[in-house]
Length: 398
Image (cartoon, rainbow, N blue to C red; front, side, top):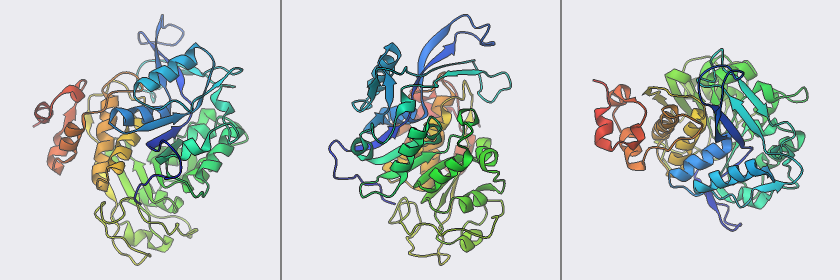
């Protein structure tokens, strides 16, 4: 699919991101929340993280949300705006507070990791189709959403359904599944995430979260079968890397058209994918356009993960999405998009907090263009994004 603007709304931007952001309190030292003596204030939010990273990479972005009419809301709007993100469509709620959360240091996946959310009844949970400027939301070449928003309230879920429904001015919909079991109440569940993912154009999903949320264990092919409609499904495989799977317009063709990815398609098929052009239409992803499922090769792209000296993992998935979308907006091939996602994630993995400066574009382009052996030898540590291209080359292990 070629990424284009709506053309009908003023102030069209590259990417609009809609979702809740919160003030984040990071511990001053390791230990239990009960023992941490002080915290450093920061910001966190899956969608605003993507908007900030893309703005830092030189794209025009807009964040649409709702915050309280309080000091924390001021901090969020001012900090996100300082990245160059358009925050003029963020609503202030006089009755509900801005969400906040506290977390311990280290890896979110660790057994001792703690997160304390104070977001129930937050201003963002009151978002709905009635009080969000839908024209401003749709005035982007890409609209980035995540499953977190759908879990905040019934009004937020209705808003997500409205934005992912067919519409004359609908932009390309980017959807990060972001399965957070602790957010979902009894009324909703993983089936909502599956519904929204199937309505999107580009889907980001971790292989592990697909297994947890949907009990899909057959690898990327099984995931592509479960999500037949999106033009592109990007499967994150942790330390293995990531794979991008273009649409296949017929479930019977999955084994033939997606060879070599591992796993076995399950089930007896499903509704055919939408007859839409693919991301990178016109051969920019290295594949010829095909009007139907005739086994014309639509090879999936893969990119191994980088070797990274990890400081903190929080926000890496958002950075990956931002890097991938940046490369998509530039019309780069699928493999390059995955590599730019890995590089953006590496910038966040090697810095504390949810946000980190992305690598300068010339450096990222140089590294993404390395041959496979050189890419495999690359090792990145704290401060690597400040290095010039020659220093980055020297960072490769022998």
